[in-house]
Length: 247
Ligand code: G3P
Ligand code: MG
View 1 (cartoon, rainbow, N blue to C red):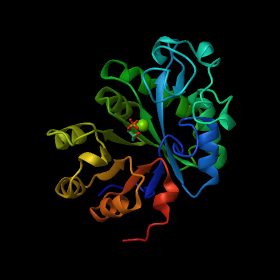
View 2 (cartoon, protein in one colour):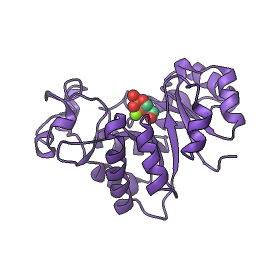
View 3 (spheres, helix red, strand yellow):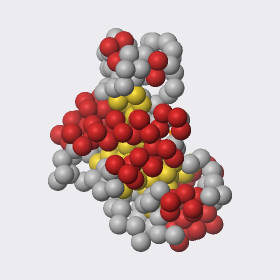
View 4 (cartoon, rainbow, N blue to C red):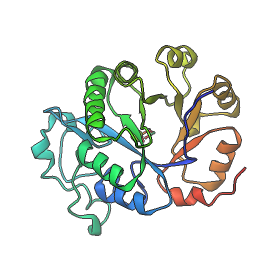
């Protein structure tokens, strides 16, 4: 059995339906809401600074252009990462991981950290994210849950942060999920809720893994997934789910 103690709902990229995703404003809003944990995405800038950002490119959520991994940290600081969502969020920047972790520690929010990288960049991104966490995350705080689609990143987590639990992110459950999660010492599997069925959920749970599903904003769907044994749901709008009755 997994010893992970998870909340039923995790705010996705902060509270992505309520505030610009992966921004300090979004995480601060999450801290004032009923959600106890948030998820965020970590990437490295061109000069190796871990920052909190989802997309490969800057266009959708900032006023910049190009690829994040080809942009230096000082150049990212010039970008607005809030106005696209609403004028009241103008001035939000792409935050460094260090800034976000400091806010999370101050507010007591729990953390599911996603290393957002391809297999090639996964290992180095995980190294830098773990170094930043070691520096800021108190030993007395609830331990973070680390995750990635990149197996290279999960392998680094197993090697360099064996004391923190880790999960493999997938879209559809791959044929080798059992072997991979065992080899990488995963405590959890994080799957796309659209591509999950009840039998798969039972199989994952039967192996003693925690099961998390993204992204669920609908209360009825949440109740179905919890009914299948899914432990935690990533949601852009946790308040839609948190009012759901216990099953
Ligand atoms: O960590 C769960 C979820 O965030 C994975 O998908 O694309 O929203 O980062 P994505
Ligand atoms: Mg993510």
